[in-house]
Image 1 (cartoon, helix red, strand yellow):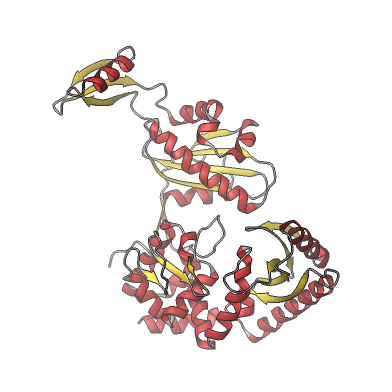
Image 2: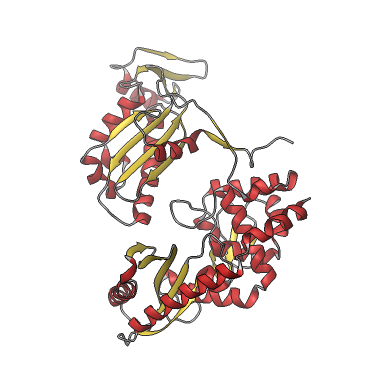
Length: 443
């Protein structure tokens, strides 16, 4: 049954001849535009295609074109960034180019509904990396040499599977499986079916590939051209877990739904969802996503200290000027009273210190059967909305990344449930209260 489903899906993930020809025309055109611009700069050695387009693993609906501009190794970082931006903007000027960021800035444009990335890298020997992009030409060459036509189509199947589960994409907003990771998995296991079977029974800390280095991640995926690099380090634990569960579910009940949009069971109970909204000054999407993800995690910790149990958190941004921190709580209203556990009475100094610190505010103090001193206290806030409003007004430096503090000082709103939220935001919020029925199943 598994192979029957794979055969039924294969045709849909392979680009048609007409689409391939259309993409080639776009690729050749933009390549020529960049090639004309690099002639002005002696620091540049050459350029080449990279990414899934160059490797022949691109999906019909997602054919980004990456052009890597190779700089001499002696080029300074400042010159490297300055010239690369100049080349990108000059070559793509007809297509409204804009800056994106990875480890360093690069230029992106949309040409006939196709994203084109003009990315700088240093022309270095393998292992002598000066920037993160330096590995990319080696990745391209390695996969061009190692992946045959059938394996390239197996990569396409795996990418489509990952997309349907919502875990495809290396960008920090997703923290999922990159196209290159998909290629590495097929290179290791040979086929999509083998990959699914192996991942379904993978063990914690299992290493995929060969390395002499030890890594501390849930699974380890070794970069074949840099065996000291663990590709899984950039993938969130949640996404690794979703991949493992999706593989098991597909093998148990194979169907074409695993290559389409996930079926989700959504809850209508939003009364314990907290939403913090604020505006931010324009910055790169990668930077703002990183900042709001950290902020959501830090605020979850602070709410926990305040007695509120945060079950899940998410963050969302329109990448223009609005950001949202989203939290699902066990309860948005908690008891006004709580018990503060102190030390055992045998610990003389500790117990005396506990009594001194808490005796004025305690409602009741006693020794429990576990020999510990207990103090019944009253919270200042038992409503999470009021707790967060006060915290963000007076404790920004404790719970918010530096890069967001000035933005939040300009103002923010705190709401419960779906109050006054646009449709796009409600879709993001619904992720907090939905179950992926493809992954979590009963057979």
